[in-house]
Length: 157
Length: 157
DNA sequence: AAGTTGTATGCAAGATTTTTGCATTATCTT
DNA sequence: AAGATAATGCAAAAATCTTGCATACAACTT
Image (cartoon, rainbow over all chains, first blue to last red; front, side, top):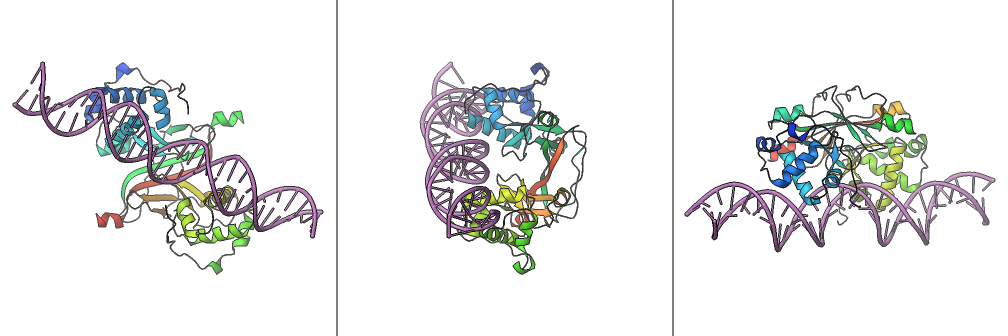
């Protein structure tokens, strides 16, 4: 695929966030490239795929984007999930200020993916419902995705 | 990868089910290959990947298995979901007797995937909690997956 | 400040899983 | 049985994710 323009809905002025401090708080070495990637991520108002971020960033290698996302997730700066589209989606735009487990878990929420346009929205009006699990199962992650057709795509059809 | 033996935990005697009628009820032409595949599917007591089914069936081409699973899902004979393992999983072993939307929706349930062994279990003790969605979003599918470490893998570590 | 060490990055290529084109075969209809 | 339609197998492509390795960068030591 050719590297063409991609849009990230603008979210908040870069000046509002101290990216370097944010990386420090998550025990991530704040290299120049990581800061660039973090700034790029912060511009996405909705969950994004690795490819979208790569196209948006434009100067940074695919493998670096990949490894950086892995690092960021390991250090709980963002979270990822599969939305049924075949691509993994990453979500940063809810506060991942603290790196502890409780804060990280609190950032998780329901996602709604449109089968037509492939976009994923966050559903934050309600927490992910907690359910009882098989005995001895140690939960690390909860992923609740609703698939269907969004209102825009429904109107178009 | 070489085609080696794979186990599908045995579930119920083939005689108990009338596969041909089941296909008919879902408006699927009951070809010889499809019956074979359906029988194979019925032997899996837990969600399985396309690859697992392909290896288990042994004589049927990968693309046929793929297209058959697509057909079966379109006709609501089974359902599929992404469990975070990178492979799509298919689930048949709860009654998909009727082909109508309500029955199909009723078959959906929570899944728990072990990050270590990659196995996915069904959590049927509780229905998938219903949540309010963005206005105008037309739900087709609900997918609730819990990831973590299962009790067997936890004991081994 | 220069040298040393460990980590991060870019490039290229590999691995995995899913998907498709097309010729052949099977199934269904008349 | 002939013709029409759909399903299947084979091969290969596409899409996505992942890794090996050489170079570049950052932090630390002296």
